[in-house]
Picture 1 (cartoon, rainbow, N blue to C red):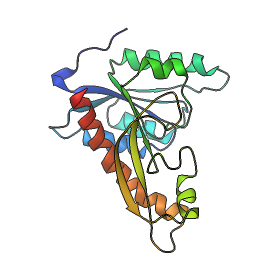
Picture 2: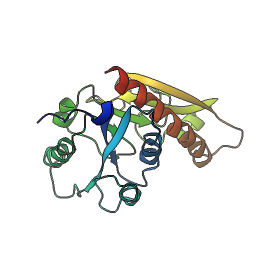
Picture 3: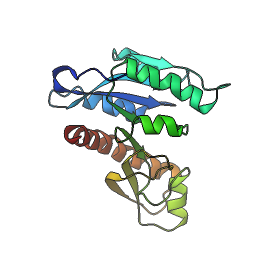
Picture 4: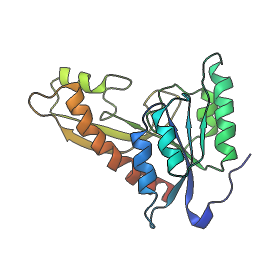
Amino acid sequence: MTAEPPRGGRARVAVLISGRGSNMAALVYAAKARECPFEIVLVASNDPEAQGLELARAEGIATFAHSHKGLKRAEFDAILDGEIRKAGAEFVALAGYMRLLSPEFVAGWHGKMLNIHPSLLPKYKGLHTHERALDAGDTHGGCSVHIVTAELDDGPVLGQTEVAILPGDTPDTLAARVLIAEHQLYSRVLAEYVGRV
């Protein structure tokens, strides 16, 4: 099934979330700018209780939620893929989506799926990134937007923002500042990427 052509030349993006969806919200608000080259056509989650779904609905964006519990990874991802394609999405943006994707799903969106990660990749793939940066004595943390590949947090990096680590920082205080950087970086990199693919 192929995606519909973009309306008015804007790329159609589906956003996947698992929680509050603050990066999704940043993309939604960026898309309100007249010059933004993308629009959000679907917000989907593997958790029907994800807070971000309520925000998406309030903003008039289609949502889809389905628990992955009791389903094999490939089965769940096939359901998700069907909903994304039904929405006419051309790109997928992972925004705090906390579930590993099946190789089939990743292959189906090859070169069309981005993720934001709260570290300066290739440092600190996976979880507990801020704690690991602090434990290592790093002077900076940060965030990266990368193309999703079958390997966790391993695809080509499209953009990064460094965030200074302050004396006395905790994982939580560092995370709060990195999140501000994430919100700005993701919309900018996504806009650049859909404009050239």
